[in-house]
Amino acid sequence: MTDLREITFADVDIEALAGATGRVAVLIPAEGTLSPAARRLSRLTKGALARAVESEAREKLEVGAVLSLAWPAGMAAEGVDIVKLPRRPSVAEARRAGAALAKAAGKAGVTLLAEGTRRPAQIALGLALKGYAFTARKSEPAEGPAASVVMCKGAEEAGEAYATARAVAEGVFFTRDLVSEPTNVLGTEEFAARLEALRETGLEVEVLEEDRLAEMGMGALLGVGMGSAMPSKVVVMRWKGAEGAPLALIGKGVVFDTGGISLKPAAGMEDMTMDMGGAGVVSGVMKTLALRKAKAHVVGMVGLVENMPSDRAQRPGDIVTSMKGDTIEVINTDAEGRLVLADVMWHAQLSEKPAAMIDLATLTGACIIALGHENAAVFSNDDRLAADFLAAAEAEGEGAWRLPLGKAYDDQLKSQKADVKNVGGRPAGAITAAQFLQRFVKDGTPWIHLDIAGVAQVSAETTLSPKGATGWGVMALDRLVRDRFEQD
Image (tube, rainbow, N blue to C red; front, side, top):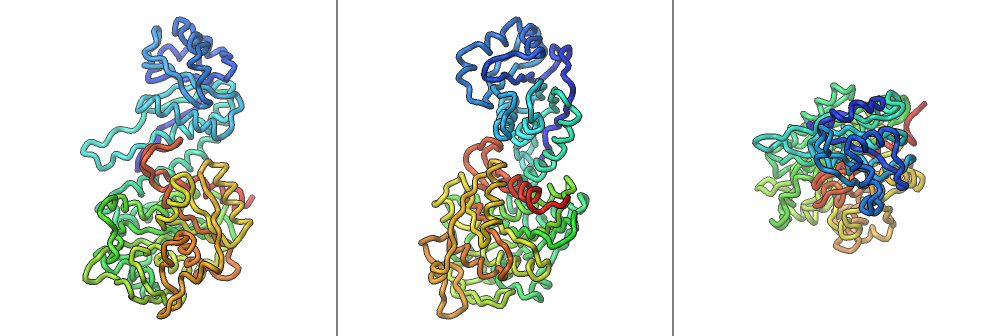
């Protein structure tokens, strides 16, 4: 796994500033007031810090942004970073500041003066998350960022708060690593093996192999993987930190999606290594819950398959039978994720009888057309659960937007030969995909479908992540568990 930057917390030590290596950073409020430690730092820089704080350049900074002084005289550090941040920042502002520091520092260590500023643990979380870089497949993998220290009041309390935040960051990094891996490394067997390794965190992990899936009647999922030499699998992860019915998290784990016989265009197909993003998020959430010993009962299930064209592959026009018993006419083999989810969702409901169920999938290009790369699409049969999730996503800064469901969309899925078709045409493509999945939700089960096609992997950096895999959803779902499903 890509290592997080090691971050510790300490009381303010003014005398240590002169010899601090790497970068020294200081938080300055909009009014430009210097704390005692900042005044000491300014004297070390022969007044350069004070002049920078009084400059027009600093005044024009956005909240959370950085102004840097290179190679300050009188100090061992390679730079001093001035961060514009209120003494009582919001969570988003604090994380943005930490992320800006990570970008300015690169691999260098950071000594941060957070004297008198609240939310030092959230600043540290931003510093950790933005420091991600996937280099595992380079011939000479880069070393991770150097260890850093946050000097603040109440260092012990801040360190305890960061311990929880670090568990979230580890889940995000785990998801990013899974999504970033190429399929010749992370096939279905290696994916399952990495999840089995999570047993060391306290998770119960069960791997269901193809013969067992066939006995269970998972014809929809198994149909997707027929063309691949890789065996299809379902992995079940259980965290029982409380009694009662669990929250079930279901992830689409298509480790590579060629489109099958309905072959995708060659341009951009290399990005389909990320079509297991939903399974990646579920895995990251489960790791986070185990690491922070969440007082909640949560079950994660992921369906792992590869969608390939071959002489054994599923064909357009084939009719498969789902675990539920519904027959599905496969009009387009590139609409495979919903077939995987349908069987795993049904199994989750039969075996776990969940209090609620949330599925995640990089499901439709239509979602990207509708919402771009700023928001995941949210569909739900339960207004309260949807509202709770949207509130959690907003609190964690992960974009999400609710789209409608409705019986009228079912007409697009009617089949003359089977109970349902797997696609409904181009109009409302993200909605008809969700409408298809709703067929496999039992009456009385609160359910959310998250289409994360636009947010799982992006072509430009975001506030908290570099270009590439984002880990979107780990923080929002962890927050939802804390706010709604944890027991005192």
